[in-house]
Amino acid sequence: MLRRRAATRSGHVAMFHHGRCGSSVLGDLLDQHSALRWDGEVFNFKRSFWTERATATECADPLAVLERRVEKSRKSIYGFECKFYHARRIGFSLEELVPALEKRGFTRFVVLDRRNTLRKVVSSLVAARRGSARLPAGVVAPLLRVHVPVDAVPIDSTCKPLVELLREYQDSVCRIETLLADRPLLRLRYEDDLAQDPLAGYRTACDFLGLAVEQPEVRFSRTTPHPWRQVVENPEAVTAALAGTEFEWMTAED
Image (cartoon, rainbow, N blue to C red):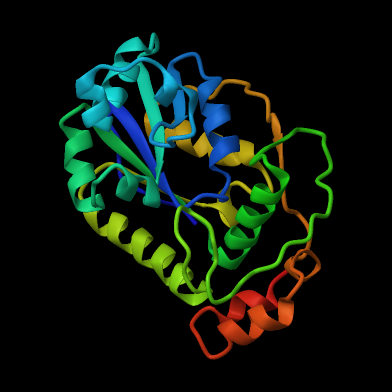
C-alpha cells in the first residue's frame, strides 16, 4: 500500500511505526545513501548514546538529544524513526510530538505499518527470546517457539491483553495519519512495500525524498518467516482471544 503527498527537497524526515514492520532493513538501506543520515530509533533508551555524558538540558529534554544528533550529521538530510510507544516514554503525545519536530526542521514524514499486527506481536516475542531484533543477510532464522499470554502480553514497555494491544496499534496509525494529513507524507506497509523486496520500499522512499536511487546492500534477513502457528506454543488460545473481533482474520494467515 502506498499513499504519497509531494515532498520538497529540503528538510529532515521522521518515520513513525509500531515495530517489527521492516523498519530496520529500510532504515539501513536509507543510511547507505550518500545524501542521507538515517539514525534509527533515537528515543530508544537502550541505545548507547543515552549512556553518554549529556547536559542537564538533554537529560530533561530528549528532543535536545535529537537536536545534538542532527547537528553532528554530515549529510544533507537527517532521518530517524519513532515507535509510537517511544513518544509516550519521552512524555509526548503524538499530537505534541509532530509540531515539536516541525520546529526542529522535520518537514517530511513516513508512516510504516504492518497489516497483520498479530505477526508483529509474535515477532516481538521471538526477538525478546533471541535477545536480538535483527539477523544478518543470508542467515536462516531458526524456529524459536514462544508463548503468547493473551491476557497480558509483555511487549513495548507495557503489558496488555492481546486485543487491547492490537487496537492500540490500529489507533496509533489512525492518529498519526490524521495528524499528518496536510504534511508531506509517505505511507508504506510491510506486506506491500518491503516483505518481498526491501529495495522496492527503498526506491519509493528515495523518490519521495527527491533522492537519486543508489545501489545499497540488503544486510538483514527476516527474523520470523515461519507460519505463526508453528512459532506460537498456544495457537488455540490466540485464536480464541481474537474470535469475533475485528482481528479474527489475522489467525487465518500464515
